[in-house]
Structure formats: structure tokens, C-alpha cells
Length: 117
Image (cartoon, rainbow, N blue to C red; front, top):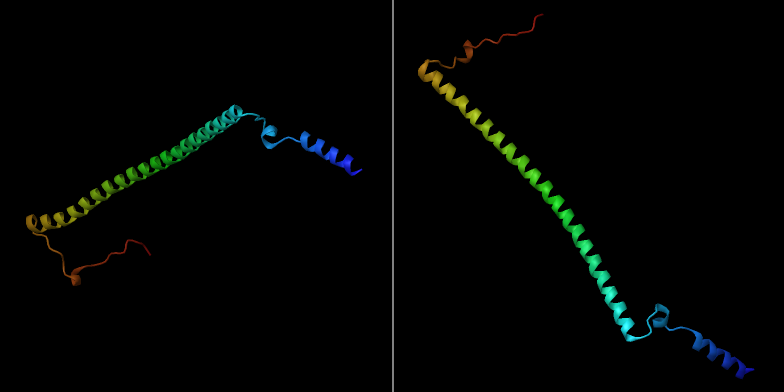
């Protein structure tokens, strides 16, 4: 019986496929083709990943440019506001020089309430 088991085992081992045969690669040419296809697939996937990252970076760049434009507009508005406040001192200077106007003493200032009671 042990002889019979050895024969069955040897038949089973010879009928089992190796890993390369299971994949479908039986010779070196097929293995080289399989490796080349794998490399091409990997390169294609890396191109897709790089393109995806570049699109996200470009979108972020556009957002940052919009923020820079908004800040530039705000800077211009602040400069205009600053020049407007500078005019106030000039108006006071012209009123004093040309119209001989003066700031009244605190005792002479009267507060008027506009609400009716």
C-alpha cells in the first residue's frame, strides 16, 4: 500500500502547476513580455497620479492668486482711506490760515441734544 501511495503522490506533484505556469508564463520570452507590460502599466499609473497632483496644485495656485488680487484691492482702498484722512488735517490747516478759524475753548462748547422729550 505504501508503494501505491508514493505513485499517487508523484502523479499529484507532477500534475500541480508551478507559479509561473499558473500565471501563464512558460518561457523567458513570455516572462519578459509580462515584465514589460507590468512596467508600462506602472508608468501609466504614475503619469495619472502626477497629472492629478498637478491639477490640485494648479487649483491651489489659482486660489492663492485670487487672494493676492483681493489683498491688492484692499491695499488700494486702504491707501485711498489714508489719503482721505490726511486731507482732514489739511482742511483744518486751511481753515486756520485762510479763514482765521480757531478751535473754541471747552467752556464755550455747548452740547445740543437732538432728541425731543
